[in-house]
Length: 242
Image (cartoon, rainbow, N blue to C red):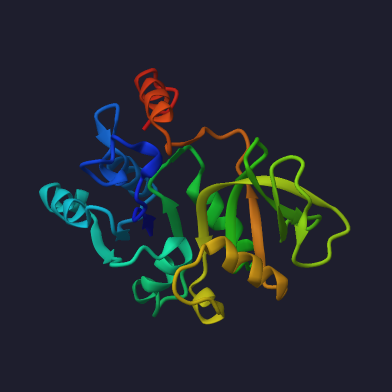
């Protein structure tokens, strides 16, 4: 699933006449870059949630023959946030026991999806979050076994633990995660909600929500115009090779 329904307010005026997914980086849209990464790992069935300029996304995909992939669109009349959007699209994943990948459209990375999925399966996780040891405004906390156990605001915020932990590591979430379809039967949240809220609630019930160390990989958030310019330069210089 590609999460692409956001308003892109931090990217204005680039998103004044288009959705965030169709903002261009080095001549390619964020959506094309994301789909290209997924396709390079053999992922060919994708659902994309839309809200802001939703018709433009549908027209863009039709013009490009869905980039050779099977793509469905989940339209949100009301913006449902990451968790609500995922839950609305659950029909796409039910009927299979295979894990699936969720990817923010405004993220570029060289994270190895095969390794991420293998880690998820090997550890019998319900959800596996790609995380890095880097500065962020919101940290997720993982215990000595690599399980999610809480969160913290910034470097100095007080830790909010949802389950006991003798020690923990603070990590930044990369906006890329692998889920098992069984998560839908355990989601108690309704309406508009963040998927992080779901993960914390699951962790409080001792469900296996794990962190996958993606340190050393290229990763860039594209939520601001300056980051778009920086990423364009990095693509042109082959620092980001896709």
